Length: 118
Image (cartoon, rainbow, N blue to C red; front, side, top):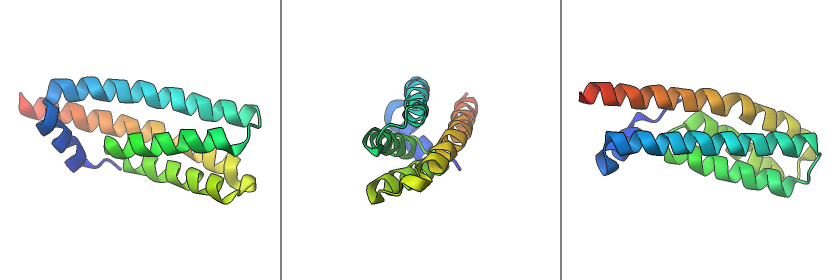
């Protein structure tokens, strides 16, 4: 679920070309954080790193209007905070499944804003 109002505000603040550049950076950062989450799962890392990555993803997704991704990351962060180790793998997988699709939707919406501007 893309928050179009957030994208529109970003475009008003920095212009469409800069917004698209920032979104590219955002997309790359998200990919790194998802890889870190997958790495935590493979190595059975403690929940501290998993929580850090989930928290960072939550903020990034909200900043750029990827609300479903933000909600998914928040559920993982909350489970880490509560020490619910039995649910972490499933919640982390949900993040890895939800966030990329949400980011793709944000990118499509941003490109639509650009085409509307021209």
